[in-house]
Image 1 (cartoon, rainbow, N blue to C red):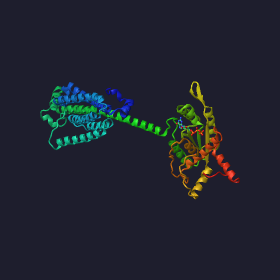
Image 2 (cartoon, rainbow, N blue to C red):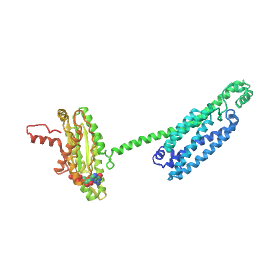
Image 3 (cartoon, helix red, strand yellow):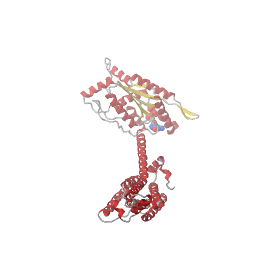
Image 4 (cartoon, rainbow, N blue to C red):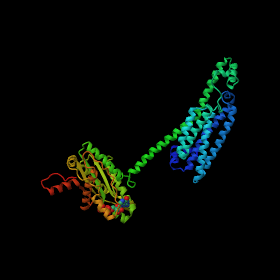
Length: 488
Ligand SMILES: Nc1nc2c(ncn2[C@@H]2O[C@H](COP(=O)(O)OP(=O)(O)OP(=O)(O)O)[C@@H](O)[C@H]2O)c(=O)[nH]1
């Protein structure tokens, strides 16, 4: 398939930049240059049609070789568009032709700039714009060299004109200076004819022609540079939109669990760290954590296969999302284990939420096929860190430099990994100390909730166990007079 102009729409352009093969991209660049060459060709045609009038300030004799050169360039780029699309997988030929193409275009555009009378605007747009476009579509190394080459060529030609006494011809006839009236010159001749025809002073006639000439040349530069500038800005805008979109996509993939579409463990822990820092800073009352694990999930895999297991995980994730508010941070913590963080939620509230989740999951019928459905249950470990407890931990931590707790696997995970020989998941929780608290506070909270989850499994599954109650009961049994809880 040959590259076509219709591929320049936003969606298609994004595909081109990311997915197309190198040959197609160079072919697209060739197509763009073909369009530019066509604009040059149309300009020549316009001048030729109006040669009687424009002949006063355009050198018509020179127009023909310039036009011929534009035709040759047009045919060459047209052939390039076709040819490059055909040599998709031939790297050697593609590289060779990229070099030829870039070199030919560099020389062409500089010559056109010089022949049209050194417009800074046109040269700027052509040089910088063309190079930037090339950077996106052609091998960057070649474009960078072409850029340096173009600069050098401009420098050499300008020096030759300035100091070497070389007069590089251009299409522009002189459009300033009153003295030209004294000598034979197209501009002067036209001024004389105009003066005679309209019975006006020759100088006034010359002034008028000079003004029209300037208008013509300025319009020429605008005509040649503005479409190119608009196109380049459009391509860059598209590129930036694509970059924004791909950044979002990348972040989404990095933070999301592919199967359940919940946030993944790494992102869940990172968010937990953030919300916990806020909890500490803002002196909120409670910080709650739920750790949830599906019951006998291995049996589902063993009995019905992994695909059914995957669907169960997706459905359960759906129940979690629909039951919990958007402000909750729910992530897939492990295989069939989920972490739910509820900042600023009291223990009574979090127990109600966990109970609601438990019953919603247990009641949810997972319809696999028309005649096959199943239901699963889950166990929950819940822990709430109160602000009194937080203050106490701070004090304990200030007075005694406690041994840093290693990022250990939770009790339940340890047990499961021993049984299932799973590879150890790396704990990536941030270790930074915060406000006089141990640096691994989030891990400690999860590990306490995990003990409660383990207890829930032990008590027969499909239930919610409060770590706060377990800890209070333990403290009471160890010291019947004490009313507090054990330390974190
Ligand atoms: N289908 C599927 N299975 C998974 C996935 N991740 C982990 N598992 C499986 O989940 C099972 C977890 O089993 P166990 O850890 O023994 O737990 P369980 O069978 O739920 O038993 P209890 O937790 O004690 O109730 C293992 O068989 C894993 O292979 C997954 O993404 N998809």
